[in-house]
Length: 189
Length: 123
Image (tube, rainbow over all chains, first blue to last red; front, side, top):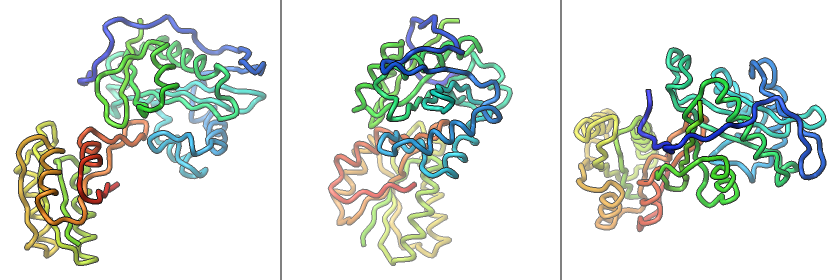
């Protein structure tokens, strides 16, 4: 089941796969992991991260504010999501995930046939240090390993740093835009 | 207050209709409902029209005007608002993506930027 969204003709990749550890531009050791079961293994860490997240950096209503609303949001999307988490000193400081366009379990089983929406957040104190790029590349590498091909996102169209980051890894504009710019990438399987 | 409600035909439209009817009854506003021509919608213009009439009748607001508009939805809605004496234009306030992001489409953007009245987005 593929929708009407426009994907690039040329696939992008290869991308690195988690786990990986690297030093960010501030000299901090950052570890990127893909929890096997997000709900059991990493949800609490990620909830804690979003509780610390500065609401001025929210995009299109997410993440919500307040621990209960954050937990509710993540629990709603966690089950079928593909997630990677960045840790520093044991604390989650970055989170990137894909959520399927479909809620039909049979469709979700065929990961290559459906489209996946991407979102990525990095805690304010860890921005501008190259973590977002590595986190994004590892999410796309992990997705490729799982057989996912079509990934899309929307970004507020005045958010030029984010758009530049997405373009750098291979996202292209789909031509659909209002307040949000829609972008899509085709992964190389 | 003289309120103009614009509907497209999505599930969000139905929610917007219900909320606006509730509010109209509560404060005694005058309500006009117009259904725009949005071919990609779940419901046809006629279906949405009948739905609106039905909901208004049930609410005892059978004196409200209900009309269908031809042409580009945003432009038709703003034109209609300009020609009447409306204090407020009400439209649906966006859809949620699978991730939970609020998305405002091109019609919403056009209406927000071009409407001569206050615009209310219903969530």
